[in-house]
Length: 115
Length: 116
Picture (cartoon, rainbow over the protein chains, first blue to last red):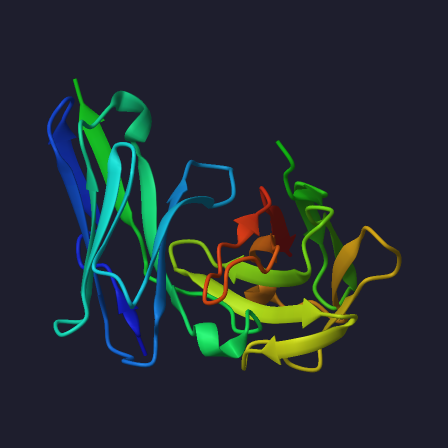
């Protein structure tokens, strides 16, 4: 039962170009979405989030877009840098739970930035 | 910058043994969580903890699992009788509970549990 799907296991992007990571969800009750970055042997690191009342949130080189009607979100990284090479996880939650609910994660996309 | 810490980084145990995984959440955070990631699979929610009691738990969190906050800083996950399929990375996370509707959880580096 994959409520959060990341259909691309890996993505290769040239340094300096835009990286676009995609995520789809099936549960329309999700109303808060997050992106995490993970290096090997480390825990997930929070990157950026978006509430379902917005369609875009920007933080430096990172922008998350949310299309509620399509149940789709994407993370844009511009420009891509070698240090961005990592596994990126999309996660979703129900804010109505007040924080009690855990995050539902996708399987992750391994982003590789090539020089 | 404050961070979530976990000990040990790697735990090896025999099947049927009890293990306790330890976490120190960020000090002013109010919600605490345990997740696990079996090799090659996604990160899965186990349990959330608030105000000294379990708030939510997943179907994975059966009677073999328990959580405790024995003092003001530590948050522990106990597996009573480990099985081979408990081998995974276990992540602790915490959340401040800031803006309404937000849920930015901060994760520790994880404990790799190997059950032989």
